[in-house]
Length: 117
Length: 119
Image (cartoon, rainbow over all chains, first blue to last red; front, side, top):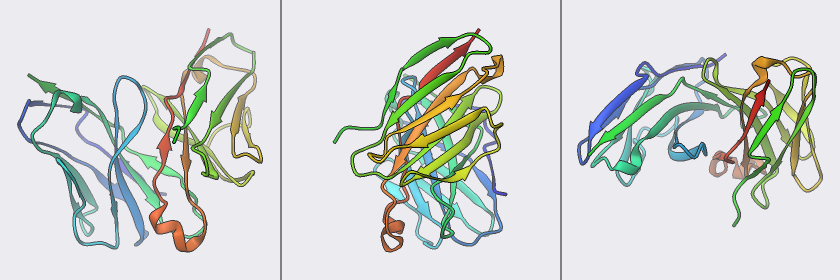
């Protein structure tokens, strides 16, 4: 079974600064997807960024980028130029790419990000 | 395009009762999955439906069940409610379809959830 670990329950950052959220995972599979989701107080889970394991290039979405280290099973999220609207709970998630495995996500415990003005 | 819609937003029940939650996926999405979110256990996978068939099931007791209709709308039911069932129940839909399209369709889109309180 796969596991996802986020070792930082809480993080804080000053507005306009950069912050990195950590995530490690454990799997015996070679093909999978990794995601970062954001959950603001509205409770809706919003996809921030995704990474395909077969791609060596790190994914980037505007101010959000990842550092994907497949051998180390590490998947960190970097938020640049932090904004007040980035304050939320961030979840790292794993999805198998094995055929027939469906769309099941395994989530980490979450990191609560506070952005200070 | 409308997002994933979950109803109701809030629900209060007493122990022993049963409850049904509803989820309408994004139009065209055939995969619907359910998650339970609690402060203690975090986000846990309940089950997934694809084209009216349960494809995956998490490690929850048989009191938790679900179904999917021909229009892809899904319901989950919890019978004989316990205090520990108090949680936010999230539904997600995915455009997953044919195998050759899968690589582009692995994203899940979530609703805002149903907050269930069991008294």
